[in-house]
Length: 458
Image (tube, rainbow, N blue to C red; front, side, top):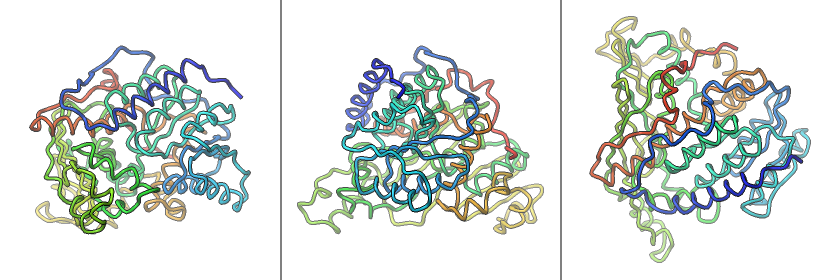
């Protein structure tokens, strides 16, 4: 076992305690926003870890989402699942049984308390840790992971407060460990194709993007003791803003080279009335049920506008309450035309089979000409192994590929912080009549010389 510095663990534990207090309260309008605290290490933009022949993996959290991650990771060459931690014995044993049934070495299991994961982190035979736990645990667990000498891969959002974002950035820079938020939508076929089209200049100079997470999830309110709704529902009574900004924002940010030539400057946000959750609770639960005791404050629809340093605009929306079809928008507008998702359609001034006054809905010619090389190589296998149409598997495959081949990851801690910080800052804006809120530069100026994410060839 490799000992973990006691001071680092105590510091991380303090962060966890502070995070639980902060996450339990709505973002207050008077809370200050640190712009750039003192640097504690060196930048991790383009960080390349030493090549790993085998990437040894530990998991924290293997419920619904985490169990899917275990299954997909088990199919990736060069990845070995060493240990798993969860506070729920049933899901822990489910993952262990799956690995055994599929011919894998039985992983070490950690259980018994909320801090059992720290025992797992003492192991010296783990290279990376996959964190799929309730939101309030993301930052403290990632900090503990990096302090233990391991790379952290964290479910979305990366963290919940501005302070937590800076703590993650500081820890990554001090330890020189990767801290990647696993934004799976960046690895969807359509998002990858659009990134390829943007890089080839099809849309001209980029002007505007639109992103969203519109996904009716009221049914999760019926998950009381376990599963996502058991803890996620409470956030609708804690924060009035965009609770979950990254699924749509991640791809649009990559199109625009955010943190790699441009960055977020400021935002303004407003929310609709918060009606849908209370109406649903009244209809579906007894009057004295806990779901009817909550005061839901998160507007059913939140709309946030972001301005970048280069003057581009981005609209980000969040709605997991109203009855409407799923959408992430995924729109990118340039001087030569536009792509819009849900449903997919394209209009170009030059190069389209139709005039730009009409949408082209036939995607097959565009896939044929502009499918991303990652999808061309791995798309069939990704779809076979599943996870939101294959994007989950492709994300894991790419992570392991980069670590085994000594390449920088596609996203870093600055990306995760920039995309996630929209949540607390949107709440601050909503609480102050939609005033403009400055977005921190988590790169501390390094964005100006960082290279854009390229179209990788494997």
